[in-house]
Each structure stands twice: as structure tokens, then as C-alpha cells.
Amino acid sequence: MDHPDEKTLRKLHKISGLPLRRFFNTSGLIYREMELSKKLPDMSEDEMFKLLASDGTIVKRPLLVADDKVLVGFKEEEWKTLSR
Image (cartoon, rainbow, N blue to C red):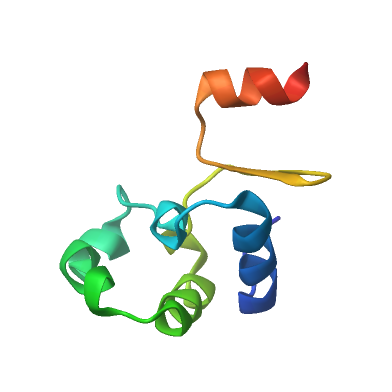
């Protein structure tokens, strides 16, 4: 998946059960330049989804989509449990 659109992000978020903030690439240049750590707490979910969909570098990678499970970012233990 290259650059997920807003509809896809909404679907992945729902399946994941994770807080939407987990979908942000907090290590990314744009995240830091826009000072999103300060802005996200005051943003609505709609605003966050639009922002995530506006630039693929804002979305945390990798995104693993498997049946009814979505993993955001690489955490070895989570990935191992999915492959069992």
C-alpha cells in the first residue's frame, strides 16, 4: 500500500482498534515541522484523517493488513503473534 486515502485509513483504524494517534509517524520530518505533537490533542478525528491522507509520509509504516487485523509500525512481538 503506497499512500492510503482517507476512506482506507478510516477502515484500517476501525479494524485496528488502536487510538488514531498511533497512525502518525512521529519520527517523520513533516510531523516535527508541523509540530503535530502540540496540535493533535486539539484536532478532531476528521481533521486527523484528512491530515493523514494528505501526505503518505505522515502515516506510520509499515502497515500490515491481514484479514481482520491491522498492525501499525513494527513491533516484533505483535508481528510474531500474527504469523502463528
